[in-house]
Length: 449
Image 1 (cartoon, helix red, strand yellow):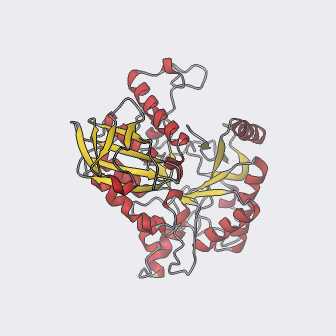
Image 2 (image 1 turned 90 degrees about the vertical axis):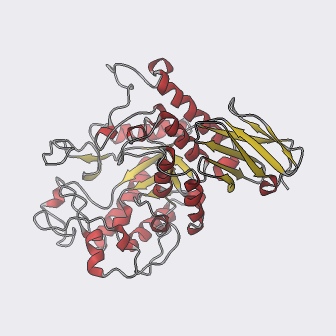
Image 3 (image 1 turned 180 degrees about the vertical axis):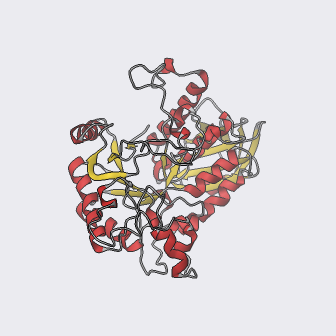
């Protein structure tokens, strides 16, 4: 059911060993976010020829490829660090620079002073990741040309722009404008790592801020909904919190353009969170694969991989290389727990691919309480109803049929072995949802009014 691949940054990174007092040291540039050559390919992955071969073979298999671009900073071992092209190429120097305080809330507040805001824009992400100054026209020109070059030379279909909120918005606007002008089908998702929907909408919603600049990213990651989903399905919040979070979708021009996420490389894996169970992770998966937006999986989510803080959350997938003890890419290489999650994830992804309503349809709330949430995804041609029950016992949920244009005689029929069909009687539908599961229903013999 996957249709696009977002790969780790493939810029060439330093091959030496870092030492520091952090949990991830000593380490190499395992993350790929410390470029030492914006035009070089990481030698551990291959060269430009193998990269282009990867993109071509992905396209031949119907898969798009998304490049992880990093315009905010470089690696400290880049030649620029000690020999910068211009005096203001960076914010600060190796010996004297500001550390990013990550006060992202100052970026949209019209009441923040310039002195309070600048450290978040100008500070170094880490002492070994020098912050580039995109307000210097030559830096902006270099990075925009580099972004265009990668698309042209490799044929990638999209870009995931790292730490995009820590760069000036005029640069973001100019970067997007150049990419869209040269490649009209180009698509960019920005990493705006914030759990506040007001904040994320600031970078996609067409809001003019204190800088009088309108940034309309093609997409941003939906960190707010991801966090709420985790909180709900490990039992920290009532299920109705999902609906309460989704009510803020009006902040976005089109919430369907958001990138919903099961997990990512900067956070603990879902099954390694306190109080999270396999059933909770499965409900988290079903919800985020059927709600509005474009879903993103992190490798291993489909087999319930575990992993604590970075870099443990980036442990190797079992299989794929010679000498691996087992190969979880094949069914016989997966244990019972992994197979259960694999089949569950595949079911919901294939269901989404088969039904336009789940990909692009309008979302309509039907019922919600502390244990359950029922919603419809509606397109012009079909209606799919999703019922989620977190409770340890089955739950009967009553739905007003007129909310989705149904009338007596129409039936909701489950699309899997879970649940039972339910007719519309006296303008209502009584859904009996099994415990700790999610059920998708389709309409039988119905006409959408």
